[in-house]
Length: 628
Image 1 (cartoon, rainbow, N blue to C red):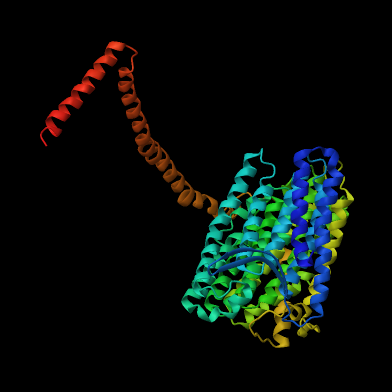
Image 2 (cartoon, rainbow, N blue to C red; image 1 turned 45 degrees about the vertical axis):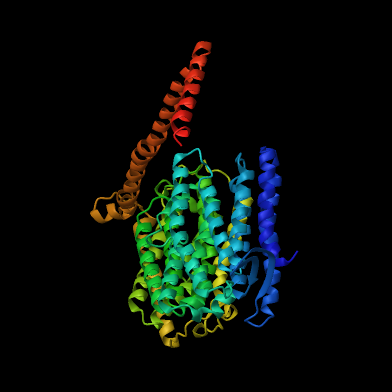
């Protein structure tokens, strides 16, 4: 089997196999089988990705590997094949998806042990992995869209995994529906692009080669509609409200969604269409504005949250905003670099949070924790490393990738975006260290009954901590004595942005200062005597309640649509359509009853009918035929 095909098909095959085994015999006795097959699939894909990446490193930067699985649609101008392509962007995405994904799978084995639905969970988990790999490897937008929709389906299945709880079902439905809104924009963009190209091929390479055929105004519309899809998938304003509720799923699901799969799909899609967005910089600026607004908005909300997983959910939303700032301003390599480093420290943060939740018997309120650094030392050390990384403290990974994004904003003279991004860096350090200090410092009462953690939970934390500490060195730029190996390898069509070394030092120092200020404020307010926000002020009430965005959507969109649907159900459907059908049925039944009286079984009546019939025929013959 071709290695590109195998990278995608192995997780799909394992998902099918696990699903069939679970359906035949869902017994807990098969735990080892479920775990073995479930972990082996992403591991094999990761090994194949390493092999493909090694080959790619020894090829010219424009090299693209292709593999065609089969021809799917060949109808007139439409020729769509299920085919895969790997370039340098694909290799980078595949590498951390499979590597971090494997670590999350190992973690899930320990986290989900004893769950009666473990086999089903691993089947869904591998289906999720396969869907994301299909999205990344697709050589045309149609196959990408299939992967795009499949990750949405898998998020629905996994968020609502514990479907007996109505809140989980509601969260899964919310994620599914909001993503369909975004996906409508995506599919409209693909349709317009297909029509504009007039059958001149529909692979990414063909689209790039024939892009000059598309009118600039139409191209701008296509770019905006594509980003609408990214808004939903990557939780940007205003289509973000599903992401915090997605925490209803098991913690490994949160780690996989936020770190290695679904939410990064929007950033990848924009980077894949870099050749298109370079032609419409005004749309790119719009993307950057949405990104930086989302980053600040989510950071403010995270400051006032008490649920450890929701803090991290809003953190993901904020970090995704940074990524969209980069790709919107044409710094695609910087955006993908932050996707890369974020995968390590965000997966680690979610998995560390899951370890704390398990140890405390599924407690998620950080103000009911405290003093855990002496009892969960390994979890504390690894989460401390991840917190340093996301806060942009050197030499940890987040410093280099976030610094590159903010430097790009400054160099492109978007000073407002740069300023908001720098402020958000301070807020990021503040809310992350707030969480760390509250959970691991302070009160140490009632910590004697902690649930022990298995090695399958703790060992992946160590691996990801190493990545969180070192992954940033791949992108060290010339100002800091490096060659920016990451950007050089990607070879994306970045816009040329120039900064003097002194400017880069100044911006880097400012970013570190913001991180240290945020850390210091968090220590002063929450390390020794943490107090839960009470909502005394209007601002606190707004932030604690997430600025009532869900309530506004409920009042302006959900309820009107619900009332409209009830009107169509009760008036249009039941009274009009059902009324017509019911009255028609009544008429036929009544006519049938009248005709039934003619068939009464009495011979004298039948003789009368015959006489009447003969009389009418005779009358007809005498009057009509005789008259002729």
